[in-house]
Amino acid sequence: MIDPFGRAITYLRVSVTDRCDFRCVYCMSEDMEFLPKSDLLSLEEMERLCAAFIRQGVTRLRLTGGEPLVRRDVMRLIERLGARLGDGLDELTLTTNGSQLARHAAGLVRAGMRRINVSIDTLDAEKFAAITRWGKLPAVLDGVMAAKQAGLAVKINAVALRGVNEHEFDGMIAFCGQHGFDLCLIETMPLGETGIDRNEHYLPLSTVRAGLARNWTLTPSAYATGGPARYFDIAETGRRLGLITPLTHNFCEGCNRVRLTCTGTLYMCLGQDDAADLRTPLRRSSDDSALDAAIMSAIARKPKGHDFIIDRDHARPALTRHMSVTGG
Image (cartoon, rainbow, N blue to C red; front, side, top):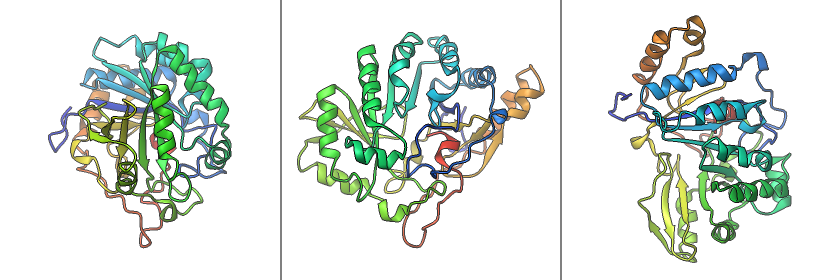
């Protein structure tokens, strides 16, 4: 699949549910209303859609949410997708908040998963509870250590928030170095009303990197995962620091991914509203020709990029759609 700008689309992010057991302040409102369960694709339908994308050139799948591990029987889908590894699919990964990880880590490895991303914005338990509104840090850390013990490579994702966690990144680098994890910092994105002022908390990662360089030796790395992060090797820990900068330095020129929601809607760009309905052709016929055509038509509309802006003149979200709807 080649988009209008010559980019090969090889990476699909699949939101298996919009539901989450946290209510992170930068992601969703505390009184979030989720989709009726009847609107969601079945796990069998999700597998069929993923198979269609693999057939057309997707080699990497990442399961997201909401929180993917709260979806009932999601391990059944993971096992079925894992069975496709080596048969068109090169990698199956997961982004999780870690709340359910302790009981699923071993099963993820058995299904063929080799690495995961875990979202942890602070190592301060009280602050973690405030950011996630409902989360408990000890349970998440138990899940992370279970993942490590099971043999999963772990990357910690942290959203950089001014006035919240901006002084913790040195400690997080040290923590990740101690346990053999990579750390990826992410600029907050203006998606959906969450009840907080993003302008107040927006923290450019160019500023963060300059501060970290005073204490750590950061060297640009050739390492890449297929996602939008730019990596730096950290000499003192032997691990890596990733930076995802949708605002200060967007990653659109090399975009190789599209996002599928739990209702069968395909978003060709995280920062644009244009979408394609794949549920209708999926359910209309067991013959995949119409589905394949719908996918190719959507890829032909993939835009060049997004234009996220956060400042006092752009205080409202760039899109009304919450991140949990599109897939984190």
